Image (cartoon, rainbow, N blue to C red):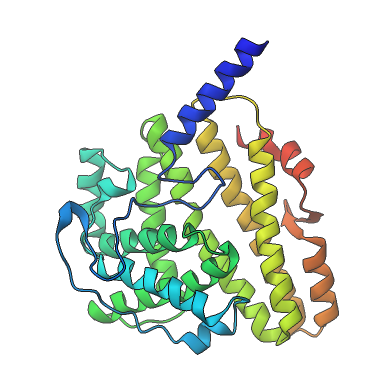
Length: 314
């Protein structure tokens, strides 16, 4: 029995090392390997580059976070580093090293690939920074919005939300769709990379709810609900005492589904609030109960619920 348990632990360790670039041991939402210093930034292959600034409106960010202004400054510094590296990475830095696939992707999406990789870079750099993850994610949302807006303006396009970012997310869907037809390792990577656009949409919905309720207590409950979603998923994942090659894909797909289920619940709150069917108290109650709209029914998110749903993703 002890030998079997040791083998399981070893396999899980190997799995962890394999997907480290996609998701950390705490379930953080993956990314590129970054090299950075406080002032002089170094891109891939030690090519120096000039630090650029996104010029994020800090007042706008502060309306949606619960952390200090100093923490926001630290996160925006990380964002500037990621922004400055735009264009210095290739698809291989996302774990995509199939030359044939990359040839097709480059032909189909051309210069759009650079912004896709930049989004993954800022996502990984900020949410895995070691700072409060909810605040880091909400700051990242505004950073990502500006990254995409600047890309549109630079390439002669007109930025319109949500249509503009949804067009870029369809590019991500296309790229991941290509790799989801590849090897097991490709499928695992694609499943986890597909999480980021859903996370963006969820935070966008949370921010809309903040604007509607205009209540600091609700903002805090939103952050608590977001973190509860992440920690509950991680408790489910950490409770799996087995390993097989498709497990990372299964876990990534389930995590994406969970965020979608949470997004559907928040969108329903927004819809009902705008129609006058619910008030701030009803919103707070929903958030405190950590509800999801899963399979067209409202359910309380718990580890046991995720344990029961797991078979649907095998």
